[in-house]
Length: 131
Image 1 (cartoon, helix red, strand yellow):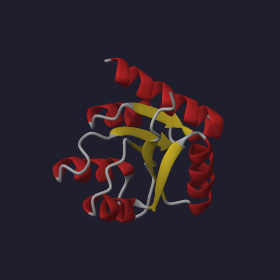
Image 2: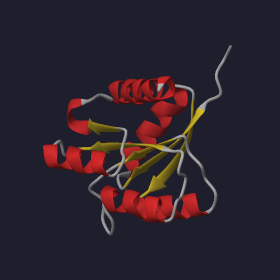
Image 3: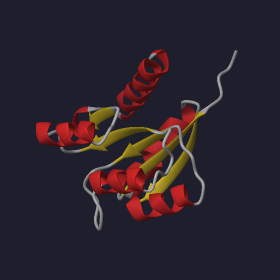
């Protein structure tokens, strides 16, 4: 039986990466929404978007991914969403901060192909579903 496509919100300030990941995830049976930066993502969430997964870049102008996730939690926007950071930074302090904010995963862009990113997201979702 075919499972219902998972809804993913991809948040990044790089429109090329946003488009590329949107295409890859949609080809992998995800219902994709994108946000060019955290302000756009907050607007969509406040407007009622409830993604199953949020894939969040860290380094963005105006507001970092960490600040974005803090705001999402403060406003109780999409409390059931699985949050995963996707960043060029792989510092252990960033990973620790992501975990402290309740992120379910941390993927480093530079050492991961788009196909591997999708596989890791699916793997994280499957682990959560088994809990």
